[in-house]
Image 1 (cartoon, helix red, strand yellow):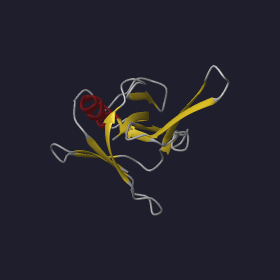
Image 2: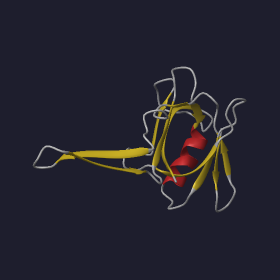
Image 3: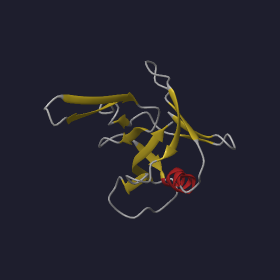
Length: 133
């Protein structure tokens, strides 16, 4: 999997150990139900046109990134730019144009060893949150 900064074509490769944890929780259709005074149902519905959440979460042994990449991702998250998230699995090569989801904390990272990092190559357990467009 990789994240591409569209304005510069810079790329950060991410290991394949991330789980798209909210992939099947998203509903492409929104619906509301209200009742009229008579009790009749008033149902309104529409198709969503964007802002699908993409939350990439690690498990205990995968979904790690080097501290240097985490720092670059943190820099990118502060930019008002679009990125392309590209899956590179044998069964899934979808790609999504995304922005960082700051509403729900765009990036979280902790050392896999539970202690402060001692080099930029130290591995961090990473969670990334995006909105697809």
